[in-house]
Image (cartoon, rainbow, N blue to C red; front, side):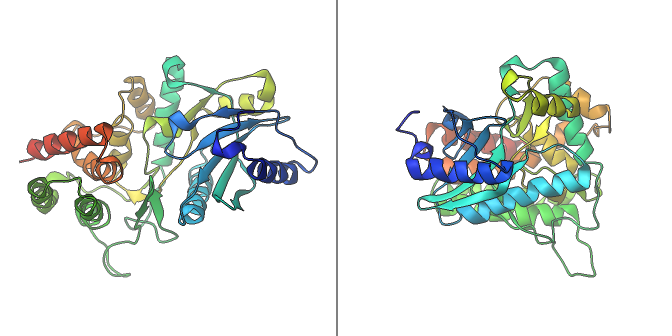
Length: 330
């Protein structure tokens, strides 16, 4: 095994093997390690073993345990309410170590985005539409708050317990304005653009379109948070079961909101084929007005990227994208 990756430290390896052994009910040992750091914001990788391998993600911040707890609760919520497929936690799903917190899930062999078939892209759309068949009484999520990437996400419904709030109110108060404050505080967002975003928020009632039913969302539905399984000899039974069920959902930030938010996030990092939206339409229609509102639902996500990565060339590109979105709705 490589010795430079933080997950391959001896104490970390022992913690993973102990959790996997408890999960399996007999000794489990890692036989190899695959570094996946280029695909995530946390150090992560797969410890290979039999009869399953273990996906492990490390968070070295003080909020790591809280973030992984929210992720596990989000996966359980989507699985329980929508019946979609999510990865199986290994043992409790989380282990504390000296250097932080570990998230542990059973690894599923996957088809990478560049190799996905049309059917596999369609399965992502169908999985998302299946989540969107679940509705609630109010926007938000009373059970728990979450994280959008590394940033805390306040899911409290807006308004009184007995009253209901509109989607524009919730989107402004729980999604866009908190991210706007964080982006300004980060020093990565110019004051004049921040003021333009504030003015845009004031126009939400006129821009957000027809009032939707509070719809269960994945919440961070960018394409890398869906896994399309492949059948490999090392995990054939698990992969076959996953393949039969279609795409697996990863790393959610669930709440009840507007279904178009998930649709807007699928391709906000990179394009996806129209097959994703075709698969979605097999289960539920997409409002014709979505094309005009798509950039509106990306504003909070652009602000999140600016907050976290605004000092990098990658993050600075999102400042331009945010400015373009704001100009679109003047």
